[in-house]
Image 1 (spheres, rainbow, N blue to C red):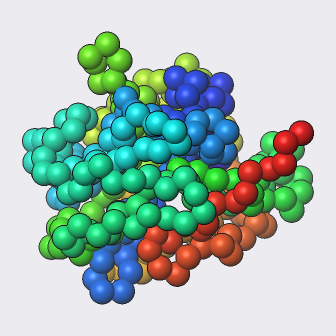
Image 2: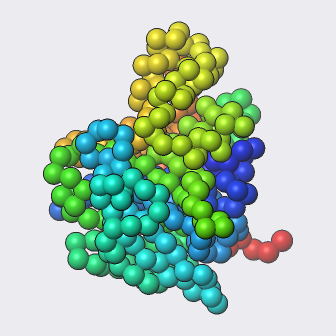
Length: 322
């Protein structure tokens, strides 16, 4: 399921849903503006009623194609008190962007997180920002996938919520070059040490390609090392699941390794050129891993998306008790 439950044994990293990055999106909107969205906390707020106060949530941007962060946005959250929480956003460049810890310039500070039906939208200079409970835009027939592609017609994500982190800015705030690469990371501070516990960009990679005992190492790694580390084992996966020969498998893997979502902003966003909230990434990944034998799960995008910032739909009501 996209990037949900990206820890070992289909669990959240560290067994904590607050640290579980579910999806990453990057697209442009009219006015020459770029939108970055990172969602976390699958089935929110069941697994966690607030963002983790000891975590650094990060969106990294590569502007020169070297698989290293040149710009990075860090989001850190306060302790939750009486159902209230605040968030501070930093923007780092250069060497500071390549460190996992918070650094750089503060964009906005101590802004409220929205846990109710309506988002809190913060305008700070050229930026728009919002964080809080939102409808999960991920759509897929997960039961059908588990049942060996006997489709059920049921969208697993139709009634699910996540915690959304949404940032919009002028295109030039990232790079004058239209081509960028984006990935997300969640790090946790424990005993004074900051450790990366989740990271990713392309949907459904770790679920299909990483062995259970390899997931923690993947989540801690750097995208720049991905091709060397995962080309061989992931080639073997494609040979097994899709009947690829080694050369064809390597060619397919070059679209997702390094695990950085490339986006040429001079062209329309459509996965794998960026990712919009309506892109059918489940069908794209099924076609990849099956060698074209399975091309769709027959589930369409959600209809509750907003036409304007913060774009993610209003959260679904909590299910009735019992």
